[in-house]
Image (cartoon, rainbow, N blue to C red; front, top):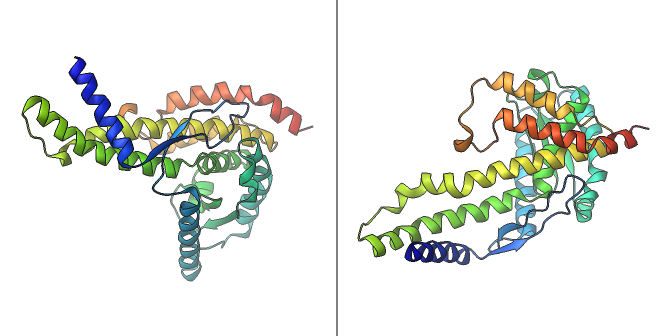
Length: 276
């Protein structure tokens, strides 16, 4: 047993060292108390990722413009940008430096139910999200708050580090298994298991953090945080059957709704104060 524990320790330490991972606190906790320290790779900096994201965002918007898919609905654009203008000033509750990001918000014409916020504050909302879910302004703010939270927590950079550690860990793990058992395993076959053990749990954790920060951002901006609950109820109806939670990058609908109910209530005083 001691040998096994030692092997696990060596594998994890070697994997993290190979990708230069270091512990960071990207945000303050806020009222919702998101204070998990994150393991970030030192091989790529936040600034480098923001620069890459800005370039990719610019390219995507240029392509959308060329295809006639960028900001074609003035009403949707006004709603989305209005929500952004109300939400963004409150990012300082989690990280004051984000106020200086070069925020940009656009609407893409697409049937996809989607929205995202790239590192550095580059936001896109798809028309399919607004139309197919018939979003209220508060539900729209819930989506955008959630996506902004991913950017604030730098989940993209964290995932890059996790992925590199997973790939390295799979190789080191295969070697260690051969040393201790004499059995040689192709590292490629361990990918799915490593992903389930290391990457997916973190992804669920990141989704939960984004949910919690998102409801606080919405509440501070004067949007009813309980709209996040009705939003995900709509998402559940649209999505139909979902994969088991342990093999999903997102929490189950039941788990997510229970968590949102707790944290929406927790930030209600912020909403009530902002609404006066």
